[in-house]
Image (cartoon, rainbow, N blue to C red):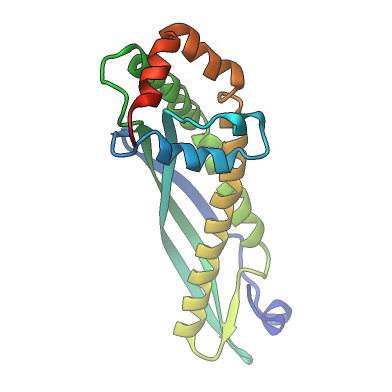
Length: 215
């Protein structure tokens, strides 16, 4: 983060980091046809056995944002301003959007089973909140330790701006790393057997009727 000169002479104490998650209730969305979530999921699972399925009836995806508050400190040394983060609070906003294919009649057998399936994804996401906090905290603490969290500049405002950008970059990368873990965990639910179970529960006629509907 800081320059090599900063590493040599700009020292800072260990930052106090806290991460919290602000999650609301899932948003159920019926605006997509069966073809639209299908393409998204098929692309995501092109390397798995699920690639053979051309129809996706539901999809659960989190929308993750974050805001930060930091208490930055600084002091002057011969090389310039040494600015560091003394305290960092990260608030991660988590909104779950559950897409149910618009062709599915509300209250039907397919509706009941698809909603129940997506609710399993929602429940698993909530179980992963703690992991998201851990990954974010660990990533930020690893960077904000020792002297590397300090930015050296002859302009204090410039050094503080760079420090904030560095912290936000670290958080964004941590969330991206979490999403890889999250997708692997969620893939366990989306098995071929799960798709076949839906056909057995509601009958081939229900599936044929769904496929006959236009996008």
